[in-house]
Amino acid sequence: MKKNAISFAIAGSIMSMIFFFTVNYLTSHAYLWFMYPTFALMLWPISVYCVKKGKHKLLSVLCSTVIIIYLIAENIINSPNHPWVLYAIYPLLWWPILTMLGKKAKTMEIASLGSLSVIAYYLLLNIIFSAEYLWFIYPTFAVLWWPLSVHHMRKNTSFEFSVHASILIIIFFIIVNIISSPHTIWAVYPIFCVLWWPLSMYYFVYKRRMDY
Image 1 (cartoon, helix red, strand yellow):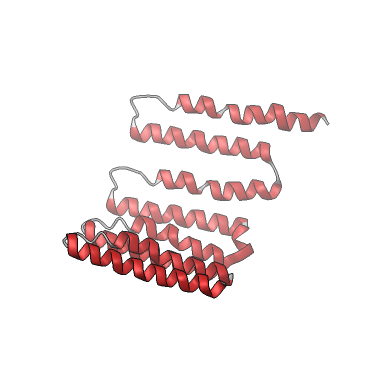
Image 2 (tube, helix red, strand yellow):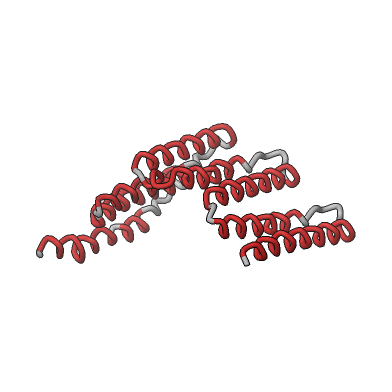
């Protein structure tokens, strides 16, 4: 049954690729749109094979490789003047890296190292390609949740997590407000809403636990 599923996925994907390529060539060969369904079809037999064999590490390596190759081709064909693929490659590499690390991927050391490397990577891209606007603060905000969550998950400190996470969100909104629209103080509105998170955690979780 497993062999049939894998064989069916390979045969089905190859037949579909040939079909889409033929239709693309006969009807609109000036635009290579067949690469879009081909990309999805390539992931089909790879996923079926790796899942059936229990090779999750191989799945992460092959799928990330196929996605990166696809994005590079898309970049070269449609917008060769701007290497936007660089913004996507580094995060995709972390999928096989974390899978290879196994249980070590859940450690604070890996979370800290990974988040710092991502921040440094996007800061470098920001400086090289678009130094006029500090957009790297957005991926920085997102990736800082990684070590923050790991730290509090290991210590099981939900109230402290709400406090530290709220501080992170508040700092993020203040920085975005200053950089994007310094003449309009709009950050106070989301900040007010965020403050309800640690406040509610204190009264309904932390304080109740202390009373008992």
